[in-house]
Length: 331
Image (tube, rainbow, N blue to C red):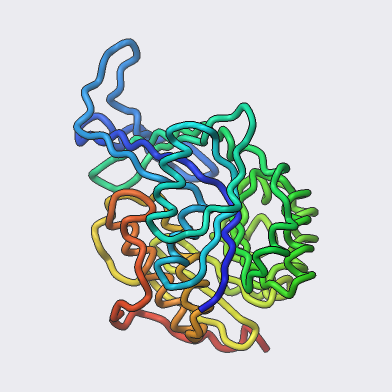
């Protein structure tokens, strides 16, 4: 098994769950597509009774770290929390999952990040109100920790657009022959020139279709994956319920979702896909097998509440799923 460092955010997720008040209602335009508002039945100035509360630990950094640990890898988390109860919850969760927490930093004068999630139990869609807190900045993190850890892989989720810290960690990873998988966020994608330049360090890039279109030209997935393959050795583009496409320079696969299960909560689906793929690949599985596991992991997570409960362990027996090799994209 491999030694894998997860670099990214740590949050406490507070779910507000109600069957009547949070269902999607009003349609409005957002990012050139129609979206429904989850706040339709909430009236300003009134009290709303909530059916259930649930406290979870989230954040891309901790979600991926837990998947690596469940897979049997030596998993290490690097990120920021505060000196508070939420920070204690983060550490407790990670230690229970056997994630190494020695390299967590306590951000001065900042609370641990927190998200309040209003969940529509009918569709699994949610509205998230987030206070980033200690996970709003990452410039205090020290890339020299990688010299001590000596990981085989560095898995990186969004650092809130902190390209300087990303570059420090990416360069250090390459100095010690550590491979990098990167799942950028909105604030990294908004800095296209800097992001494109950073991709020279990246071994595996994971983005969704809209994010891919912010990096390279193209409309359909085959166009986008061809252009991304010129920037990174391995690229994966997800497209929600439409499935995904992936290439490692030798083979390209187009595949659907693993299983059409009722969606309970979409939080953490992307983290489950990315970390599931790398966990399986780092365990010696093939590119194709790792893509199937990533899809199964994501499906499992969205069928449960929270970003971690549904994470798989790697030994599950998986059934067949629609996946086919695409010819011509790597020629």
